[in-house]
Image (cartoon, rainbow, N blue to C red; front, side, top):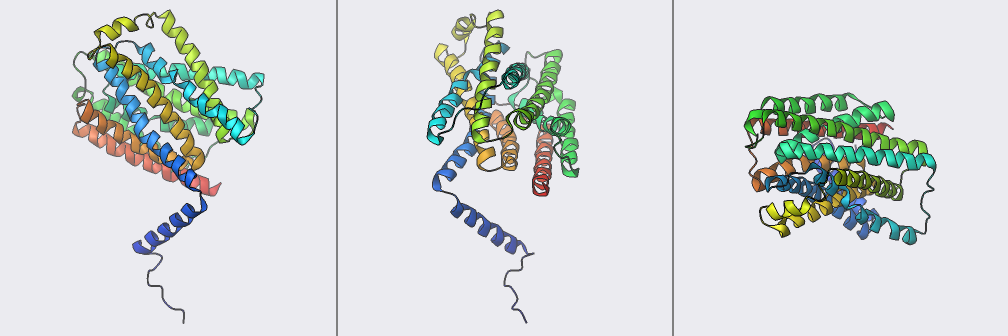
Length: 352
């Protein structure tokens, strides 16, 4: 007779023991620098992205008016990614990816879409509380799944369909409870437009994600950390160029000095919000890139799910955003939808 195991594999303690053993083995297989970089990437996603959203709302709360300036701030930090990319060529002794005409045109097109996406989100944060805007922006996951299925032929299973339905239900709850979290001075039409721009920005964000994946598959033929950094630099550069043209034509760039003088807290506070907004957004992008390639897209999805409630809670604490029962319910439903999406994505990865 075979001796019985003291901890049955099917028990909770058995599963915990098995998970702990796998985690210990995974830790031993990777060098210490790997874990340091992964932790830095996780911290960047969970801190920098919410901080960037909060700073956007701080800009509007303290007298800022321009949507172009906030969209410009979102891409003004692109040199940070370039400063990481260029030394990597020398460290790994590789050459940059050849820039064909089709690849260059794809970067220009994605840069234009990115500039438009940032402008839509700027309008959303101008009219919506940061907690509401972050919850509505979580719908980008739905559009990423749909466009990924249509353009890149990514798999959609029952769990992903369930997440789409659940997240859509969460957005509906916020829309029905619109009267509870509107800032003073925001009209009905402005609030509705903020909601609409947020959803349109999320849809465009999902399209950009799918098109970026299509570029890797069709034009580059590979997907590596270097390639993604290259795309991030080029797309952000062109988005920066398009946004800079927009801010100059609208004369908002010339109005920054006037905004700084009228900003609550003074000129120093104004420029600190602008500078840290650019830095935090770019750090969040770099963190997400690191997590995807050091770990997996599933972990990046988990962190995206976690940063939604972090942003909402931070907005309630720091900006005193109203948090009604309906918004709490929407937050819980959204996190449930994220969990369903992550589970469906992990099952898809295993089957493939």
